[in-house]
Length: 93
Image (cartoon, rainbow, N blue to C red; front, side, top):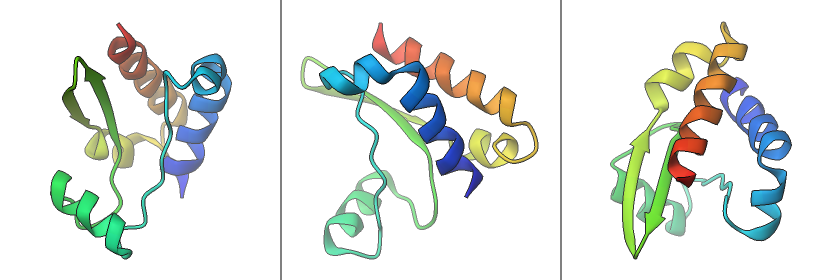
């Protein structure tokens, strides 16, 4: 899937240090598992989705990038990668 492949590329290359120190976490969730079902219910998803979430002081800010991801990952991968990287950087502030 283009979204997952391009997302991994962005995270692994542009945010390698943040991945290493735990500031950035990349997770793929299988919503057909019991744990995945709970996460799917929490974010109200029923299919492939892309979220960039931020936790600060115990409070979560949720950014649903699913529409952006499906609209760009395959046909405009450079725009997708830039937009995703920008959203991650914004979330790290």
